[in-house]
Length: 350
Ligand SMILES: NC(=O)c1ccc[n+]([C@@H]2O[C@H](COP(=O)([O-])OP(=O)(O)OC[C@H]3O[C@@H](n4cnc5c(N)ncnc54)[C@H](O)[C@@H]3O)[C@@H](O)[C@H]2O)c1
Ligand SMILES: [Zn+2]
Ligand SMILES: [Zn+2]
Image 1 (cartoon, rainbow, N blue to C red):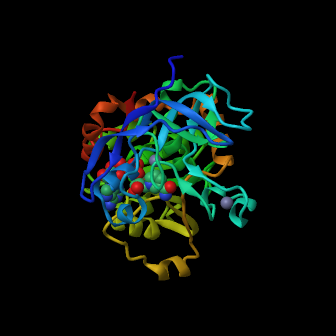
Image 2: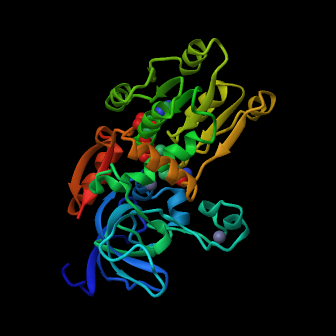
């Protein structure tokens, strides 16, 4: 292990404009009590990073200028703070990016992902588009057997997909996945792996991703040339699916989920709606007794347990969804590639 430098260069959101990232010098942070210092192995580009790049309303309200962003990451523990018993120096870990206080009513009830005093790594506070970062030891999760450590950053979006899916029935159920970005693609894969009876995958016009959904086992793939609601009803004897998951960020897709979920069914929404806020057909939700649920992050730690079980059994085809690896110096190009949509998950190596 090389000695730890005192400073580092990291991609930093510095300007109050779209794009607006510069590489800045920062001190390498020291791990405080119950924290670990991690040397970054790789960090992937998330839909959230695209929102920050576009500098939409949500980003302006959440990301302080001067923040090192990037939250989907994995690396090696290189130093530990006072009181840390595990992980140990030399361990390879991936990060749960929701940092919690573990001592508020939400944490007590098992919802630490929406901790009242929480913060999101790489959004509200410095993250991992730099070569070193600190995180609470509890957020540094060991890498499951069967997962290539170089792929470990994808557990954040895969966990989002599994958390969203498990907001409704999956095994033996009909499931619709709206939006085939990396998270939607992981959801198609995970729904099949968890025994869904039928998985319908919907994008708008992204043929590249629609083809990936087919390769991942989707039973029916729909796009802008289809009447999405009519096709879903046709495939489900007119009832609609048991479980609809919204990963597109499109108000139209949200309306589609509500019109194509069965009576008493489940609509789980992970999307962040940037500048166009959807109008929700609320009477449909009420009279059709739909369970409409917002999803945020991953359950700590039940989502991680479900995910590790699927990964250990080799049921997630990470290599098919992780389509591009680039160097961290190519951060702007990686974000532009993610915006273009001609990709699955894009991972940046250090
Ligand atoms: N709540 C959370 O904790 C959380 C965490 C991560 C990401 N997110 C959000 O989840 C969403 C998914 O992220 P991602 O990176 O997989 O997405 P992405 O932005 O890469 O992909 C979205 C996909 O939706 C497709 N799409 C556009 N309009 C559509 C329509 N009308 N119907 C169906 N598909 C349509 C696009 O072609 C694209 O392929 C984003 O909105 C992201 O901000 C939320
Ligand atoms: Zn993410
Ligand atoms: Zn808390």
